[in-house]
Length: 90
Length: 381
Image (cartoon, rainbow over all chains, first blue to last red; front, side, top):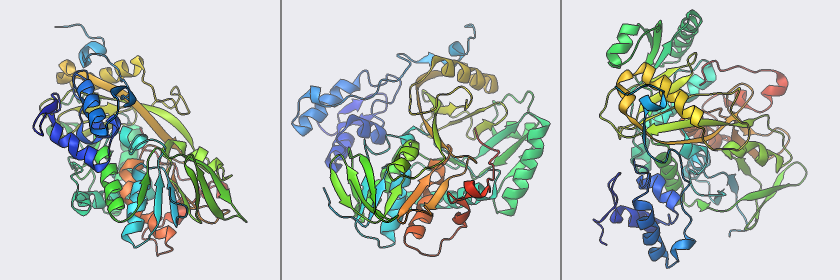
């Protein structure tokens, strides 16, 4: 993994951007998410959260299970506003 | 951990960091911020990102006006791009009563130098072309309102404060505030005791609890406010859309996603529950698609919530407690804490350092509730 490796594909966040935040002392998933938006895109971190957890663990020399995960927020899958509003599909 | 500090700030959100930065910038040394979780974990990182000057009380208008002046150059001042985006707020009036309230508000705003004006529904549609103007009677518009990234702003203040020597302790919870002869003497935390004569309550949703720690009764309560965000889409419209009578606010952020919510003071839970409800998402989607039908295929990505810390008149409580020397408060922002943080942080710093305070914030002291000098803010969602 080098600095140009994309970690979060939805928000286009590279390992270099994440490493920069880790170097500053932001070592929780939540802090990194708030600053870089990694995990905030349409997939809601389903792709990148595991990669990110492993990367943080390796950086801190900790086990993956010792890194706290982010809060899961609904919905599980993106829903069109029209569907939520109760409209019928065209 | 440090044993002694000149100022201990409880709460590492946008208020606490802005106060710390403004104190340090004025030369104050030995400042500590206590944050029980991580930076922007509370209301600061959960807010809707909007910044506006179109309020209905003189005090809120002045605070918001001066705050936006600071926001305009804040990326440069803090050397951090906080995504300042000045695309205006369009507040829609649906009732005659609202139109006359807006006229009053605009008169007040213009007298205070705020560039707001009453416009027709057709003019509103020129600003936001896909807008459904059915039932809209008029709109209040201020092009200098807009949005800023609240998370980045909080981190920007935090980093600027730390580069001036402020110590930021995360995962450090204040548990008790010790006093001696009606004066602050120390703060107990889960990581040890800090001797200090000055404590600032900047605890956002937990302001009341941090009052009780020092035996101070603060007349505020916290209430859940929900919010949602969509996937990013091409820019359809730029201004914030808001209505008090139809109860909503939403706007598109620079990355293309649309963020919005509504208030439900009668039904929403009081306290610290920050979960989300399906009913909110469905109701909000109805409000959004009714107003901008073209977004019906845009997908909701995430919903969450945060606390409004409500004061009896929806205006903040700022300044030192009259009965407890060294106990300062920056609380009760009633949903507008993020947008007012640049100015409230500066005012608190001036108050703590006993400098001349630029704005008449003595009117926002905690004593106003006993004196019965409530000035109710009519323009809140």
